[in-house]
Length: 229
Image 1: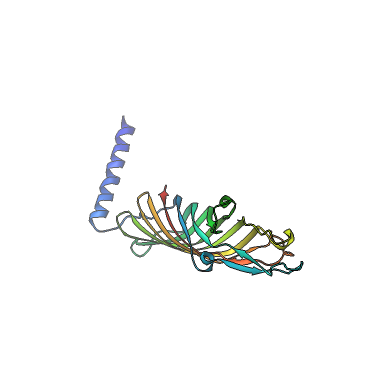
Image 2: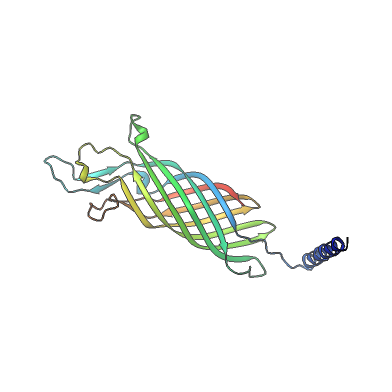
């Protein structure tokens, strides 16, 4: 009984102090770490959307001197990650700095080949991770504005058809560790809305340095919706 009374007194004292702080104008620290999951459309931009070519070494008479990478069309992305913060909030608890870690990033775009035959074979697939600095602004209540810059590492696969080439003239697999992203995120309680611009090139060389360099631009704009736990 005494323990219960003591715990009740501690609870009431804490609540009273908390109310006194809020009434005196002192802000609470609402910027906290946590997991997030986001999903949404991926829109290709620039030459990624227009279609690209890469040169190849001609080894057979009449063989084309370049590969055609089909224009990328709308796709989708999935982000699973964690917001990590260092130290307390500052600027009267309006701001807090940390790191945004996306430990699983899956995204793809369809490829426009101008025909409906075997369309399922023509995709740009990507799997990777993202990490970079994060600054969160809490203007009011539980509304958060996240600004981040991240470096992306991508393992890429392109399914296309190059019937006019020997198999050693083209590659379906690529890797890029210097893709970049700038992001603006809006959060209210558990709800998340994120605008991302990703930019960089991917070299399809079957992850072998002795293969021909077949680099293409892969810039995208993304609008992701999700939740933060």
